[in-house]
Length: 311
Image (tube, rainbow, N blue to C red; front, side, top):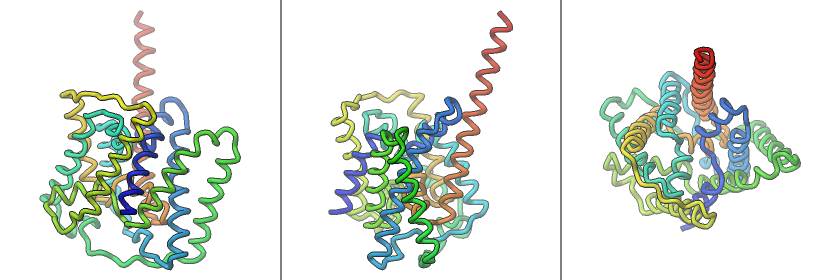
């Protein structure tokens, strides 16, 4: 029940702050604004402080993510994750925000995720992706790395809170990150994407009341938070948006199986837990998004300039 409560609170926090990688990349490329990227950094740091502290206090290294190889599948999955999020109009965390705010189009993103995860299993073999590999025991993080990570996360948080320019935007990302760290301390590796994937694959052994209840609580918290903030606005599905959400969700579902993990788990568990593959995958995804938005902005500027010259 603690996990269900924490995911509900996490959903409520996510409804108050955008941790969407698509929105952050668009702000960075088009408007030269880094506030979105700062929110992502603060959420990851707060989650890292909670995870690293609890893993040491509880003597439980299994709270931290396992180390996975960095290869072609991870790179391809990261690029597919960026393409799917761009087509969908939101990443995993952004989809929670928009669906919780009443945009019914993003309910079809969840269906697309299941279709993508199911489809990749028909195409791939167990040796094609680390997502299908046998579980690897989690190594204990070296003491030097543990202290370095904890001090770095703490330094970023302190600097953000002491700066007058960032203090106002820091509280909600920090709260969301802290709650995410507690969620992963209760259930390492949990994500609503995994719940959708197990449902799509018919893996009833992985479908527990705890996992399903936590996924429902996440979206219930997002809805409750949106209503409390006055942001709830029902938006009916449109044919074009539904198709985009289905296709984008399917690409993100495939990417989750290849990396493995969606960008929610990468940002709030893998990176905070000092897993190198998480930082590489998330970095590739962000870079691809920024390049896509940057290229689109350059094209629009040239088109406007050509129009002015023509007139």
